[in-house]
Each structure stands twice: as structure tokens, then as C-alpha cells.
Length: 150
Length: 150
DNA sequence: ACACATTACATTGTACACAATTTAATTTTG
DNA sequence: CAAAATTAAATTGTGTACAATGTAATGTGT
Image 1 (cartoon, rainbow over the protein chains, first blue to last red):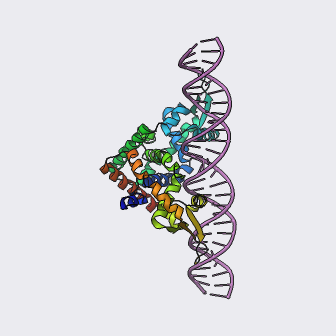
Image 2: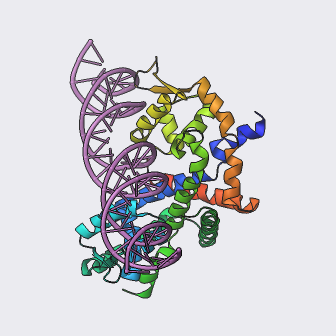
Image 3: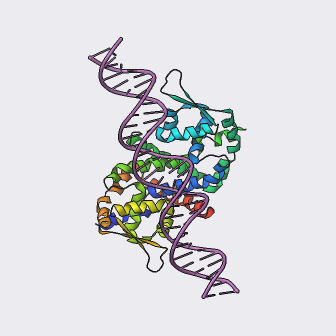
């Protein structure tokens, strides 16, 4: 085993580890803000799609969020129990489940409005740094989804 | 609700979402490589620390990996069952649990040696882009851990 | 010395995350 | 049109993550 092998297997030389840790810690930082809305982070990003689209089937939601039905089915049932969304089978295709936002779900958006700014101060990057990070992340995401079919 | 509120709550304008998705998809891309070693991603990064340090208590391991005992205890028991590590109480402080790498764990490193290069081609960034991403991620991680105590 | 606080790890409970499988509905094909 | 293939969700099983709590060992302050 040569030196390069040793170095490459060090945690500090990985790109994946800071990505993993950063994602986890940032989601943890969201928690106190999201608790006020009775949402978890995954539920929050699902609601974000619903605030924008009003209505969406599970397949499309999964493609947008990079999540499968094994994650979404129980999560959407919880959001339905909280009254933020409705779940109904499509009339034209009984296989498809249409998720629609409720009045109560729309109201939640007003409470959520303060979250992005609070979280921005938490990340605390210069505007140009945030843009660079954003673009690099989407580039990697694109490379990953090109190579691995989902 | 004004326009800025609407825009700020769009998924595409978040920094956290691509971070979350990218981390998740990259870990998913690791899976086929790690299956050959009978490791999950979290087990892999724990082994990375062990390959470097040979011996480490749970507290230190948790600080390095940003994980707590609730995650590490069952994970380390699994790695012990696979024979890659040993778990023993410290003689000088019975509270501390010392994790040490085994012969078998050391051997696993040779099989793992090919993984970093395979994954690098998967991420597929220019060297300078990878460096920029790396630095920005550690900057955010630093900002997050300054603000939130762990 | 000894009550009290602190520390290190383990346990419990909730919530993802995803591979693999199942089920029911819809499409495709011979 | 009927059998076969495909599709969309749901289900099952394994493995994290983490907050909150429990427990035993160690420090500490008087």
C-alpha cells in the first residue's frame, strides 16, 4: 500500500464527507425553526413543492425531491393528518395519487416566510460564495443523475 | 404576501436543498462500491477514521464524524460483528469505550483503496472546482458549528 | 469523605431513506 | 381483444440520525 492510497482514504481528503456533514448539520439547524410549524425538514421541502405547484402526483414529487414512494407514502400521510394536504386517486388513472394543498397548507406558507432569511444568516456565506456553492452542487447533482439512473 | 416571500420559499432558491439532494445521491452512488466490502456509507467513514487512528473512543469518533452515541453505538456493534473492530472499556476510565481496528479491519483497507478514484470520476468536477466546493463546504460547516453547540 | 454535578455511553422513540417486493391499473403487443 | 409488459403506489425490512432519557463511573467542592 503506497502513500497515495493512504492519503486518499483519509476522511479529510474526501469531498463526500463535508457534503454529508454539511447537509446533516444544516438540516439540524433548521429544526428549531421548523418545529414552530410542526414540520420536519423533509416535510418542509415537500410543502415547498406544494406551495409552488398546488397539486402534484407522487411520482412527480419524487422526481423533484429525489425521493421514492417508500419515503413519500408515509410522509404524505403525516402531512395529510396535519391537514396541510389532501391525497386523492386520479380519476383518469387510478394508479396515480394526486396530492393537493389545503387551505390550512396555504396558511402555513405565511408562517414559513421568515425561515429562508433566518437560515441564510446561519449559513453565513458572501453572496458570490453562495452562488458558487449553489452552482457547483447542481453541477455534481447533474453529473450524478446522468450516470446513475433513478 | 409579496413576491420576495414567494420566491424565497421556492425549492430552486434554497441552498439547503441541493446540499441535501447532492449528499444523498452521492452516498447512493457509493453503495455499489461499498457493498463489495459489506459496508454502508456511515460504516465506511467510521472505518476511515479507524484506518487512520487505529484506536479511538466513541466520544472522539462522534466529534470527528458529527454523530452521537445513538447512531454510533448500534453502528459500532455491527462493525464489531463483522470483525473489523473491537470494542473495549478503558482501564483508566470505565465510562469510555475504546474502539480499535482488528487485523481483518486493516485488510479491508486494501480492498477500499480503489473506491476514492471510482467516486472521483462519479463526481466529475474540474480539480479547481472540487477544491472550491471543498473549501465552501468546510466554511459552511464551520459557521454552523460555531453557532449551534453540539 | 461525601453529596452533587458532570461525563460517557446506551437505550428508547420518531422519522427518514432506499432496495426489493407486492398489488392494482394501464399500455403494449401479437 | 387477451396475454404480457409496464407503471404508480404501497409495503417490508434494514440502517441510519437525533432528541430525550437512563445509568454507571468519575470529578468537584466544602
